[in-house]
Amino acid sequence: MSTPATKTLPLATALGQSEPLNSLLRRLHDSRERLATVAALLPDSLRPAVRPGPLDDAGWVLLVNDSSAAAKLRQLMPALEAALLAAGWPAVPVRIKVLPRG
Picture 1 (spheres, one colour):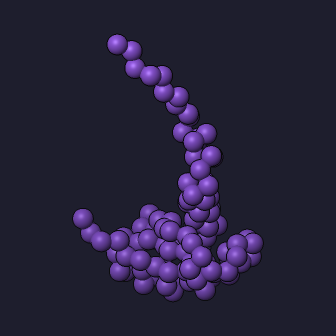
Picture 2 (cartoon, one colour; picture 1 turned 90 degrees about the vertical axis):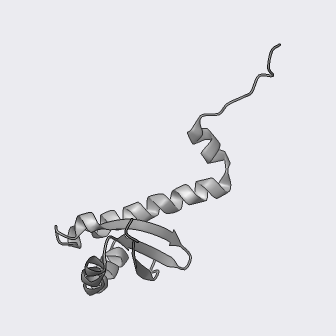
């Protein structure tokens, strides 16, 4: 007994045909690019502790490993926001979230 042939699409094609997924991919890319824009402003010791987080209409989230990294990042926030504006990114609130240990 044969099974009906199923048509499979390459992942990139499927994602490109889905507007919600395409929008999600754009936001993920933009979040990474925003972090790349400000990474040079982060001290070497802080860089590995910061990851790009969600980006939406309410703002952008930077994810950090611990509260001390969050405190250092908050001190740098005016410079980071200025760098984002200078690079042409739209002004959105930047929030910092400490990742739970696990």
